[in-house]
Length: 298
Picture 1 (cartoon, rainbow, N blue to C red):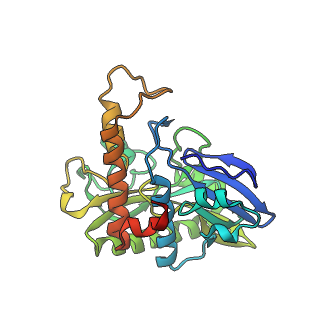
Picture 2: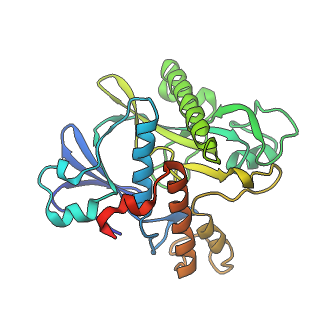
């Protein structure tokens, strides 16, 4: 799905989101159905993926007791939109406060997995240098760790040392972002655990509005977080996650693809399996059927 909002000024595109100017104090953020893997945006979208991301973000903004940028998800609250734009935006838009974006990804890890596991297994680095010896892949960490990263416009974010992160944002802001990020992770993980889901790691983004630091962008979605079914968690091995793993697995099996654009087109069964994973984590975390969120659009 490619959103069509010709009424508003288009400010920029991300891998998944489109950003539009509403006025001097407000932005429109639209989550598309685009999906990326290995830093390549694929030609074939995952139906309703953008609506899952938006619906879950709205859910978490409501659950988490923290200042944030979300004002409305109703197309009727955006001045001047046409009826066609209303239909395109339903379920996938957020009207938000403009904020000065803090240029640092606030990553929190409660389990040793992904890039941190690779770093740890290779002898350690900025995200794992303080961890005890003899940990296994997917082990729960003694305490969640804060592993900030640079915000890359394209490609991979780069992990920051604590010293470099403090230089980037300043000591006082670093401490506030670290404390708030870990608190949000703990709250999210405790909530998910009650529903049989592990929040292994996640990343937050923050911005400043009127000298107040607020949570911005998406929050605790399967694109920004690693969710595991609790029943599948076995330390020492790979854990299936509620995200685009079917896409990554299929692409990894394509021996003739060198992970540069264009990616091979996804087959129907991979698209369906990926959509099912996104929908399942939405339903398990919210306790609501996804078709109810879709309302009359399907």
